[in-house]
Image 1 (cartoon, rainbow, N blue to C red):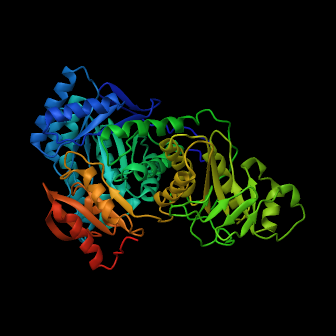
Image 2 (cartoon, rainbow, N blue to C red):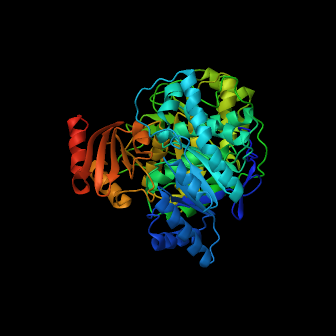
Image 3 (tube, rainbow, N blue to C red):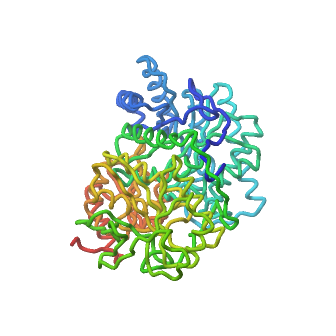
Length: 591
């Protein structure tokens, strides 16, 4: 992997029915049905809608043996209608279901967090080395018969680790960490290799983009250490809907695609699943435009930690850089909050009180020292020895980092690394310029471009310029959304909502709308909205409050990981959620 020059990671190939994943094959797009698997006709109809949108394969939840029989019928009906798209069974908590369905579909997803280990209880458990080894042996006893059936039927397997469903056993050794997620997967991979089973793909996901990106990076490194190159499925879990879901997904997935990782992706939206396919296709196609770009000559800074990057240290200048949160530089004055911190003008950058950072030119700076707060526009090719010296002598100069390179992410990365190598600490505003008339296109491209840099700890602020019909207000909102998706700055309520599946116990889209309507003014809170308990409490560990399907028409409410009220009638749940927020002093009335 080269930080500056785009090339795809070479993975091993996996056969999934009539398609091949990994190797030199194109990145595949997938989704997951949200119908009840036992609603056979409804599932077939939805599957056809998803396939017709361009899905390469499709997943169905498979809770029990009844769902196995239903999935067999769904598979047969699709084939009767001429659809040969591979189907994937999604299994949690029940290894016997995985054995039963392995001869029914082309691929089975199992979750190492709950394939054998009991459901996560969040209790502090202690295991001796001997007890821990015994638990791993239980995995082998359950996994090997499953692999034997998969071998006999040419069935592929996805090992899908979710941040929200690590077992208490893994948590006892590694905590809720990327290292724990990786080890949860590696335990299963080692058994598979030992059984000479290689028809495997890996996914390792989180709703927190920082955790997701760092974990996948670590997973790839760990596989390489042990001589493995299995293909990767990328996705951000519980990303949400509308703008939030698109920005969060593009930022997390885009950061990894930029590094060449990823053989298949799913953009998980809390919407109709067919909506996911064109969004994912746009993202994959945009990253692919970097193929064959002019090489970038960059050097990695010695103190840069790719697996756990720290924020680059910079000098604070009038609210930009230093210990300040990354700022938003806006185009035009916003009429609706959140308001940009600074506005770009023809003469420079000005704060909302009119205090200016004037533009200065490199040519005017020879021999000049300690110039006041100002802005210098630079690109990576311009960062020569003379410019580095000028920047060192003028710490109050804020850099506006621009690029026109086909691989702008790689070129801007190289700029930051060169600053670090030369111990230049000037604050840097990252700028990208677009020509988009469609706001979704702009969301996906900008989130994918800024994501890798922000995840690497780079940037004291961002500026999106767009020569298209997307309004300044939409652009400003997008910049705040990108910073929030990167976990750098909260400017609105964060809703951690699942995309829904056959396990979902309420109408997800209408429920999200109700919860958002009641709580979207609580700008410093994270609220989880989960259809069931598979990932619910775990993914909500990062949330302040949670709303989780507990049964048909029943909701349980959480304060962080703790379930505080169970089985509330759905029609009462939003009011109960508001009461819970008020009880803990986090409620504010709408202005």
